[in-house]
Length: 163
Image 1: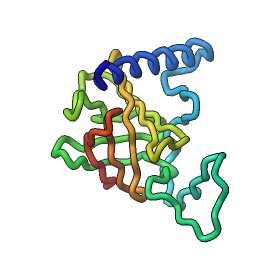
Image 2: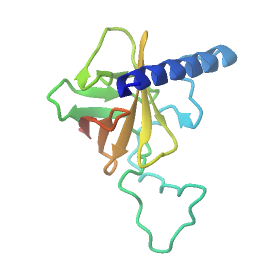
Image 3: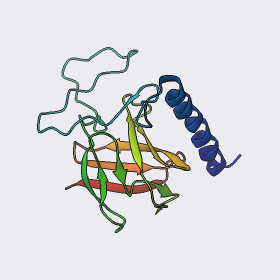
Image 4: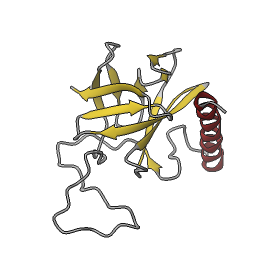
């Protein structure tokens, strides 16, 4: 099975989880997935220090990984691919964040972005939904104002810099 097929299967499974979350609680589409949360409000406060994985013990003098999750991803983001500015709002509404492969795709209508709380193998998962489309991207952060999005096959899609 190709990585594109795996991505489609993954998107379908995530859609099922989102549907289950929505129908079970009667809440809106910004409900959180397991191990994820809506995008928190923007703040000038320093981000909370990253937590080590449960299996890892803190090491004295250790440095926070370069992919630590910022306290918020809300803001206006300049893409490296020359496409239009991307926006992410406090409640998770976003624009321009859906990609078909490495090409931005906007079919019109509302778009939402949900970032996972937990890191896996150095990446966070960003779920972008613009019904009927939905995609999951691996995201790596460099500080609070730069994030790089990758496909599930580790193909770089775009680097975004917060304005």
